[in-house]
Length: 126
Image 1 (cartoon, rainbow, N blue to C red):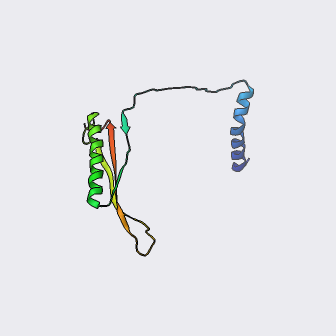
Image 2 (image 1 turned 120 degrees about the vertical axis):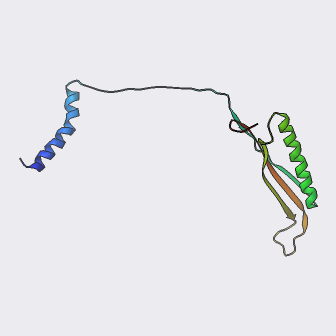
Image 3 (image 1 turned 180 degrees about the horizontal axis):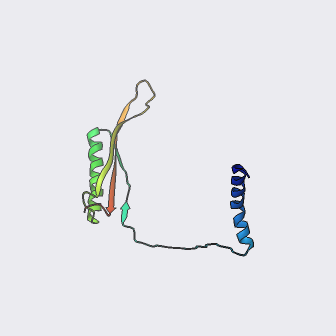
């Protein structure tokens, strides 16, 4: 018998071995089932808010925006969060025009926007 035929017969025998074993009544199997449920108190809170103000004058729009954000931070700090945990994440001030596509747009005021980001949880000093 050639080496090639011997290899083919060996591979064929390996495929038939499980059929012969199960025919003899040797059924082997492992069955695993499980279920888990965990309920925990959250250890972190992230609150996203935005403050937007508008005024005809740039400095007044910014001042009003800062006043509202500072009042929000004051209330947040009264709840027990530190200054590290209550901070502004983003700020933008831009002019507002009546029609940006016209050849001569008219300035109608300024808008200021801040995104305070109060964050409380593990890993934050406070």
